[in-house]
Image 1: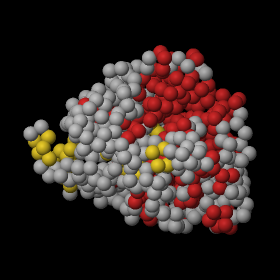
Image 2: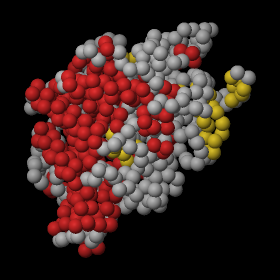
Image 3: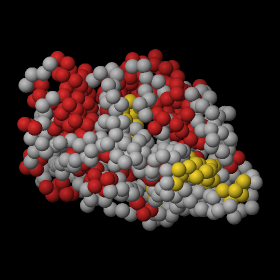
Image 4: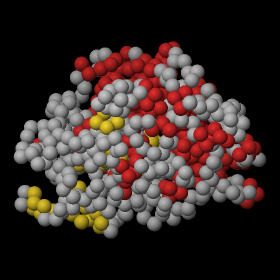
Length: 630
């Protein structure tokens, strides 16, 4: 252990992953953690087997990050999910038993930093799994290997270090200073006297690990899901970008952290350099070359934009996916839960735990002007002109000529989706808010059964929802993206913008326009890029619509210090009211759809930095608590 660590965490989750039955997803295999070295660590296959088991467990930390969007402005989580308390449950068991939530946290848009104890513990379980792999392979190398085998074993070490860095970036983003552990922990006594490591020290360790990973990893993945040099560079760039953000915008809730403008500048420049190499040096391209594809007319869905197919298994293995976690399919017990969590009852009897919020619809810009449309107006379906009034949220024409990513991401009134049941297609189903499961509903002389769901925002997901039969609601084999090339384009533009790298700014603008082109939007006008603030607004806008529901928004709001600006400020007597398309506060919150009402400064501070779990502090008296939770 080269750095003092702290805490504890280690409820070392050495859960054994069930044997994956299909060769299509090589990551999902048991890890053999408990086998003695005499029966294991004998050859390259054993090493890969151990790495695959570690990755299969680590996947559960990231592959339901769409739930994290509940802490942003644009995704709503059903009230019964919000009320579930998962902190006394083994998260791996919660996931594998089909829990409605992911077991790592309770979900709420305000005051959420005290509800992530399981995420904290399970992160350290993943870190210990990585350390176990690194330790075992290093011992194999020390015993002597052929040149070919040693090269492959070093690649596995590089991958394990990359995943360890990925987990640590999550930890420091949420909790700031945490214990840094870089060797396998065997006994609980090994972590009961550790201290929190300063975030700057951890950052340096992550940069060092990712540099080593870059040197060890290949340029091209040998199999789907294996990591590459581009993945190491992209993640190193992200670590530097986050470090730059904290130094630029500050992190007053983290005791002892002093923002440094020079640190920010150097980190932005380092991030821009790493991202530029990812973009230019590895032949990566956007899915289907970033072309928007075709988009069906309002109320039809036979032809959907390319962006829709980016989030189906059609995109598995595509160069746009730089870091992704593979999943199994039917009969493997390793499927993703996207359809079950995001779709309604008409689609494989799914549960619709999450839905887009009303605020999202106004973020999709006009394909004609390239700018924002007039704001939508909530109207009750009982109002006589609700379906025809200009800009009414219930008027389908209000959504005409919008960013193609809107059609690919969400349903509004009179939009169609493919019904599915028992792994078979059941025909088109129209979404009509609060008109659930109505048979013989007439639309233009044709009759349908309307979408059946408990969604209460006025919108439903299309993004991530399969439009073909053959798989159940929790049997998806989509590779969940942790880092996509479009994300790297936008992070590069952000780094260039805040580092004032004027010579690179034209290229940064070009890359943002490539992302916009995916939505069939025209390029940014000069006024959108002329100043640092204006270009940042354009980058922020693209991150909202391009990365919608992929788990990035909560982290962006916090590192940019934009929670108050995005919701409302301290002491606001009205608070931030979450409304549906009818103008009503949504159901599901104890506050009747209102958050941050009369909120104190402390309420916001507890969102910017999370609570060190008291259960860990009880085991280790050296663990200090973050200021807002003292």
